[in-house]
Image (tube, rainbow, N blue to C red; front, side, top):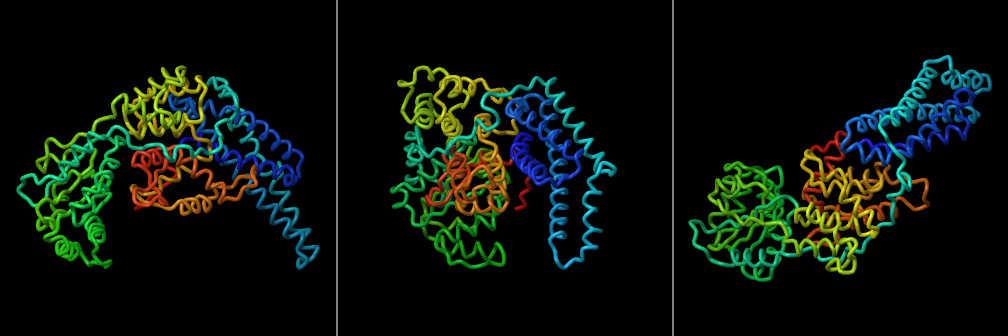
Length: 509
């Protein structure tokens, strides 16, 4: 997780605790009280430079190290303040307890003051933190960090939901027509089923196109049985077979092994014209496919299997050297999609000043629908030419190694407020292709303490709802295809969440 993200979430908590310690006079010693006031001033000073540091850490290693140092220091400060608050609470409990004799209380109370006096190791710890704070302030000057206009909270905006009805499928009419013909025709093949492979880079719209085909009325009329399976990184023949079995109407039951499951699946499929979508296959192993395909050979002639993938190696092994290669959107289609999300119109005719910057951003997105939607959503609330220009000239576009993350998506993440960054990073724990409920995710955020905000009187549920809607409006989440009350994350958004979360979260699955 980026250090700026951790600090943006952690520093408000540190300030709250620091204020509480000072206001409640937990640190009774004048020397310690004075020391904590220095911390408050120093942290306030440093906090003003976080926005600039968060931008420069992308390309400057020294700034990243500076932020890491500040992050570790913030944790140390938080630990000391936590100790002080805990001891004060114990002290108060002892003082108020009528069951403890007065003499005993007199013996216990001074322990608190002794522990946090200048003569203890805690005193030297306070001096060390004060020194480190000053060093960070001095180093900040050498790094050339500046205070950005608007301060660290300038990115906070009311959530937007204006894109709910914006068209999400643009420029795929020709692809749809050609692939539909492949699905509906009875082409000659050596088996009862044939494969319709769709290949393309991440974010180009393979899954969206497959979903259009799967839901087409002509397709529904032609095939007796249909199943859709999201495969992703882990090609698990047992789980894939189980999903297929349940999708085609097989009773819900547990199978002791793959052999029993596939025997039951074969029985269900025999003599039926069958359509299967295997979405997002990563495996290159021929044996994976051979194991999975064993029950398919007795289906009715004309059955089809749609495979979407970023990698062509498995298809080559199956003899499909020329799969359907899904291309990037044309310039006109990309412009239409981007303008819809950024401006709510079909083109830039009413915004001539923004057009050159929009054209530049369009070129950098490379015709990827997901990138166009994400950046368009980001710009929806920005009508100032300077803001569009800054986005176009951002250093993130220049990164050669972005962890495999499309720069446009990193820019979209970078524009989020600190609370939204933290909430999105947590979403790395959501498995790929997992369909989730909005309230389910909000409750998880609540359980982690992410929705605590002393600056507002809103309930955590309301705050979570607002944060969720903003992430949805910015295309970090998408509506599930079959149920508009459920949600999914695109694979690239899942990769982005994992990338920005770094070592702070671990998913075991």
